[in-house]
Length: 256
Image 1 (tube, rainbow, N blue to C red):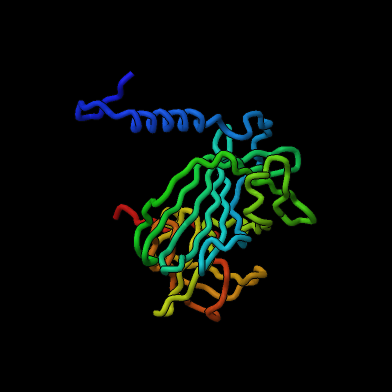
Image 2 (cartoon, one colour; image 1 turned 90 degrees about the horizontal axis):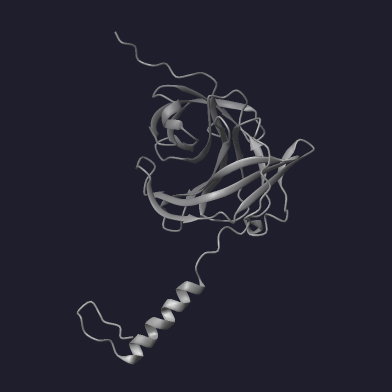
């Protein structure tokens, strides 16, 4: 058999041999499906919520925070793990893991399906997608021990144990919105990150501020909402804190 190039010329024996080896390589390296084809189905989650955690792996140089959102639909539950921070060049990055959440006995199991990296240069820029890959080999298992939700290694987490041991800390109960303070800005404001900030907050809305132990330490006012990022200005208390939240729905403009 002779192989021809797109110009119609006959390709020599050496190049033809190269293409034959390349074809065999791609055929032999084709995907064989997910590494866990027989996962137990598990039970649908009874609860949903938002959590924060300290990533065990230093994905980013500064401002690194971990966030988990579990949201239920009619017959299933989905999760999103996001790690927010700044890279060495000072650009803002979000590493995201998305998939389904199930209960296996007393274990909360998060089964990844797709992974992404998003980025932007400054806090008030819009995020842009930068990378995407399939990651159905990454499974995260959590167990409640003495009231603490901690990651546990199982036979299904063999490909994700590098992620390290983390503890999930629930965001304030009954909060309409909750996020984590990332950094103080030069103009006296601060940048925070929280799921659905742009949908759940309005400009001028009041936020409460808690420290790491959950103690109220002040209040702030929303000035800008850019996707899941919030720029807010301190209203009271010392300029310290870890979590911002509100338990009230934002007021919406009326028709008149």
